[in-house]
Image (tube, rainbow, N blue to C red):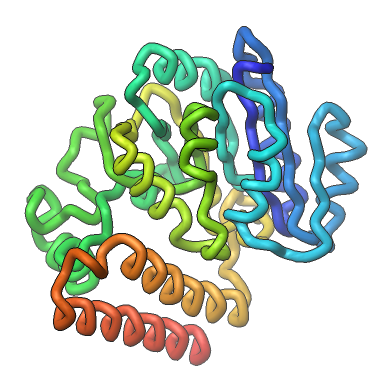
Amino acid sequence: MTDLSLIIVSYNTRQLLDDCLETVFAAAPPPGGLDVWVVDNASHDGSPEMVAEKYPQVQLIRNAENVGFATANNQAGRLAQGRTILFLNSDTRLSPDALVKPLAYLDEHPLVGGLTVRLVLPTGQLDPDNHRGFPTPWASLCHFTGLNRLFPNSPRFNQYFQSYQDFRQTHRIEVTAGSYLLMPMALYQELGGWDEQYFFYGEDIDLCYRINEAGYSIIYYPEVEVIHYKGASSGFKKESAGLVPRPPRETRVKVAKESARAMKIFYGKFYQHKYNPVVTFLVLQAIQLQGWLRVIKHRLT
């Protein structure tokens, strides 16, 4: 058994994956060892061949089709032997201390069930999706109507991104993205891993909700910074300037459809029994309307 199992799911991200793995193996290794897994979701850009040739120490799983983010993570998660597990996007670049410092914090705090770090976009801005509250009907309403932007420092109106928090300090959050999620292996196994109903959207919110339900906390740990080329892990390449180009239309439409489907799954699983039928009807209609509007927007642009 090693200290840490690191899992990366990749789909047509050859150069990004290469850059990511280079920083993984350049980072200070955990004292008890590290095993790295790459699950390739039927890439056609030579990604698995690059991994096999350049990083023979990586455990490589090649899928014949794109099985999605949750299923692919579980494929490696069932085989990994680390006492902790790190889910990492292929469009990230680690700093030298991005493994050992978060792992040490996790070891020192046994009631922490998930930990993320300071994710920074190539523009220098923080990735807002890495620091969120649960998408309750009220939080979602404030987010989609823009109330959270009008009152960014209000815990009442900005529950979605919680930007009123001090991002310089380590603190508890409710939801983090799957771009960098560190957790104890025993808890991952206890929860049954990622919910494979989701394809590539919403599964991180689902897992975070179950971590909290199990009595554990999720921690935002800004002592470590990781660059995130956001959106690139869906299959887009990094430009020479270090930015991610706009996805093709068909991909943007698919993301819009999947996001709506994922929110319906999440609401039905965790919230439907908590709210009266009128609220549930309105929420589901709002999710569908938002999905249709996004689809129309992407088909016209």
